[in-house]
Length: 149
Image 1 (spheres, rainbow, N blue to C red):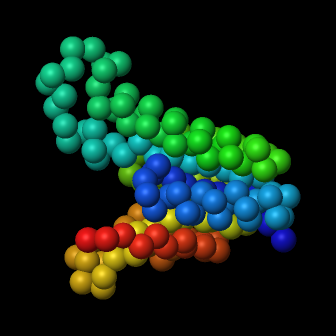
Image 2 (image 1 turned 135 degrees about the horizontal axis):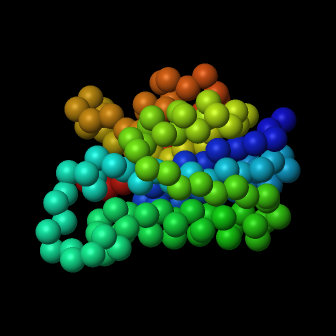
């Protein structure tokens, strides 16, 4: 049923359960798992980084390294499950980059994680997952992770 599955990750708590689901689903369908991490340009663009003396020590580099670590952790689990893996790290606004990736690569399914939050919280702040879910024409499975406030 699925040949290609996209799993965008931010390496956070909400991604852990979603990663398990993405690997299991890809393995069950013998699908290729695309693992995507977006280095959020708004985070490193808003920070002066004055204490860094070299670009390689900067926040952007640290965020990229976090992304590489997050992607490789899921990729290792997927490979151990016999799943073919494609990894990608890009820079930009996360929901926009994820939607661009979907449009360019045409996955059959997107699996994303989100933290389960009260309605009041959601009314004030949206999430990357919600933005993708609302605007993508590709089916999106959302794996919720409860968090304590």
